[in-house]
Figure 1 (cartoon, one colour):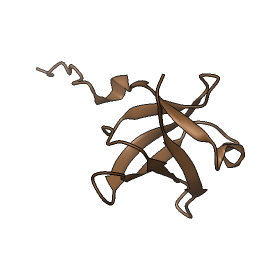
Figure 2 (cartoon, one colour):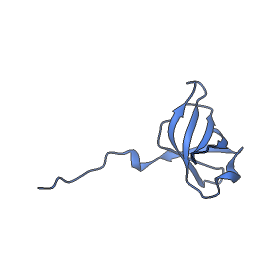
Figure 3 (tube, rainbow, N blue to C red):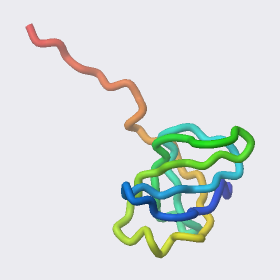
Figure 4 (cartoon, rainbow, N blue to C red):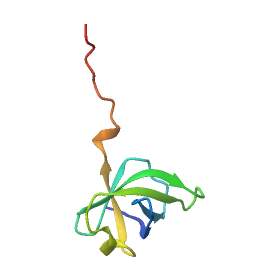
Length: 88
């Protein structure tokens, strides 16, 4: 795992704002140093060299992670193309 940023604060919308050290794709899961999934990146904001990310929390007590480093974990399977059968 590679450190990719720090959780800055909890926005009024319920999302967390994360200062990234590098550009990541939307849908990347972020975790703490123990491997606990913390947030999923929904959109990137700001400058390309050091963007901010708006992320959906994946834990109920996200406030304890504010100010802590986060690591890129994996791409979410939700971004893959889903197969849908047509009705006849």
